[in-house]
Image (tube, rainbow, N blue to C red; front, top):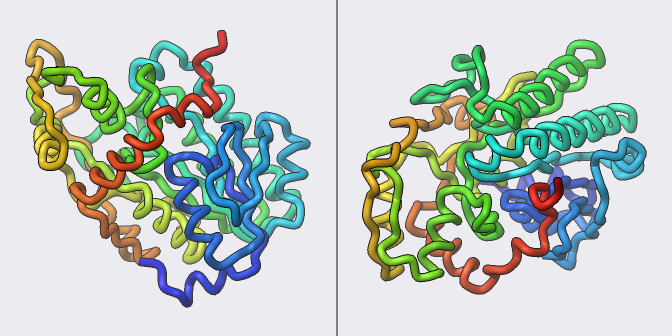
Length: 328
């Protein structure tokens, strides 16, 4: 998906990656370290993943810190955020909303002041209003699906549009779907669908009880594919707008479970007294294919296998991460 010619444009550039220890960020770091010795990662996690990069433990809610981090920087990949389950999003809204607002405002303004040449901002599918298929030129009115995190993401998108209008900055924006892969959040208290299922299977839940009837359709994209899409977005630009980054198709929860069963032994049952959730949520990635040459390659089976293999060797990594939900 990313040619050597494109990667050459990152050669010896000073690159800052916020959230570079996260699910997508670690993949971006790995790819860019192949061509630049000047990759810096900023995170509050107690994790160092790639010895080719410089890791900085810093709090992005401090504006002066953000100004220092972006000084003499060519490219910024702003991926830092807070991820959690639907239940945690509803019960701890301020723990999402306030830090995300501060991260975004500080990094974007600091990058502007320090004349960063290119920046890509990672928004979210949760910034969309509810729909079955998400198109970039639709579903933009109404309340975001993720409510507080969704509003915070929309505000950053609007801030970038304001910078474009006033200062001529042509920064890029992507909206990924449900992303999974090595380095996902396997915290049992706030994990998303795939890591939650894997955690419960690994703990021996038998049968694995799954809410609904398995008919709900979701769009699950592998983290390495999305990371490549983000790099392409910074390279090509997103025309003062944003592009979706998804898998290109939806799968049912039953299909997800049956795919897991091809390489993991477990039993499951559906609890049809519980809601399956919204019937269908998938992304249209036509614009990303046309604008930034995005083409996800990882099959669901291959992605799940790699994620499970990583998880069985690193199942306690989540304990080294900054936990925004352990503090009152």
